[in-house]
Image 1 (tube, rainbow, N blue to C red):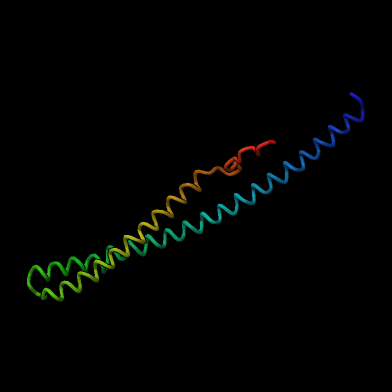
Image 2 (cartoon, rainbow, N blue to C red):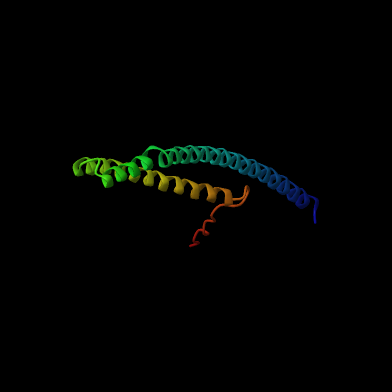
Amino acid sequence: MSEISIEKVVVELNGFRQRTAMIKEEISKVSRALGERATQLNDIVGKSLSNLREQLGGTTLTGYLALQGKYSSGEISEQDYSSQRDYYKSEMQNMLRRLDETRKLMMLMAQLDQRQPGAPGPQRPPAPTN
């Protein structure tokens, strides 16, 4: 090999090393951003679950069960029972909706956890040649 071709190879290798270092830096930035976003999602899910737990274990479920008891014992009229039951039904549907949203967030977080830092993303197919 001539000295010129060796220099070309060395220059190409140095350029490759620089590009590799820049790519590694970008991967590191993306990994940090994903980690921060995962932490934010985790906080949101935790707060949402805590609120739902309080509602399910507290006023809504207890109130609905108390309403059923009052109606069964004849303490309230059919009309009062129906209106209050509709209220509790609406509250429980809202809670189920929020539980579903929380489940979706948890699934997203699990997907983020499965991704390994530095793992390549989806590959693009090669461009067609003419």
